[in-house]
Amino acid sequence: MQQKRNIQIIEWEDLDKRKFYSFGVFMTMTIRATVYPATLIRTRLQVQRGKSLYNGTLDAFVKILRAEGIRGLYRGFMVNTFTLISGQAYITTYELVRKYVSNYSASNTLKSLVAGGSASLVAQSITVPIDVVSQQLMMQGQGEHLTRFRFKPKMAVDARKHRVTFGQTRDIIVQIFAADGLRGFYRGYVASLLTYIPNSAVWWPFYHFYAEQLSKLAPSECPHLILQAMAGPLAAATASTVTNPMDVVRARVQVEGRTSVIETFKQLLVEEGFWGMTKGLSARIISSTPTAIVMVVGYETLKKLSLRPELVDSRHW
Image (tube, rainbow, N blue to C red; front, side, top):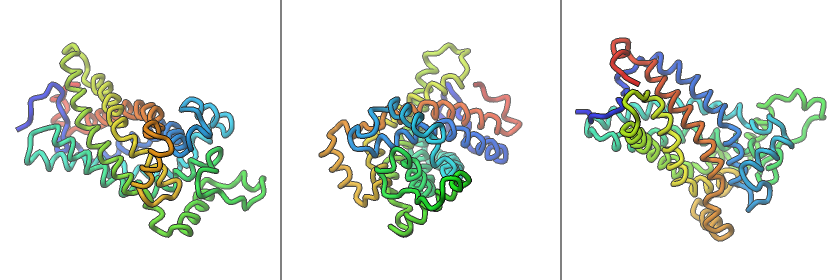
């Protein structure tokens, strides 16, 4: 039996799956394009030693824009678009696990926690190899001295103007494989799981919690979508703050080619202290805020648009 809630949750069995997946690809691509510059800035801030290159999020944005232009903020973006696959895998896993857990518990918190963690496990198994390559591409330009792999200057300047993005990507892939073999593409996998499984497991329960609390405070005529759009960033900020130390470790393991999560964590503490654990947090929250708003509005709208026809009039938002 479902818990009585102020905001109705559209569950997996309520959806027209064909519409759900068609609209979902467009939604995921829009979100990634919107927040990618902040993701790139966060990566560079987390990998740099102290403040050797940038003094903060705004400083990094201005310096990258001046030195590398708009294209510099989208280094590695084409490769990163392959995470569309993991995005769809995430959504599907989340909804299916929610449905499965509902057979044993009516607690929305439990369903969200288990489904969020499970979805992240599946998605990260697909995403990590893509992240390893895209993060190396992100570090090119001003941050290339901080990474192990760099573009090889094989062509004259005129010829390089016509060089496609995937030519540069191929350089990086070949270098990673030559240095580390196939294992190199899963460098930081454990650190990613330790970052994103808790992040996802925390985000969903807090999202529903904040949405419920806001619904109690808001006028009854307030559209549910507005409350959900407010709850998303609050949940994202909460989850980002809790998991940021592991995210810093993950970035360093993947970019610098480290093998030990524990040793990387210890070295970070010794060299930069507690504040080293907060590196990139503001950029992460800045990137997660629009991501959360766009994702929540997009996802809840996607589910509404994908409702089976006979259920369309039964949902208030």
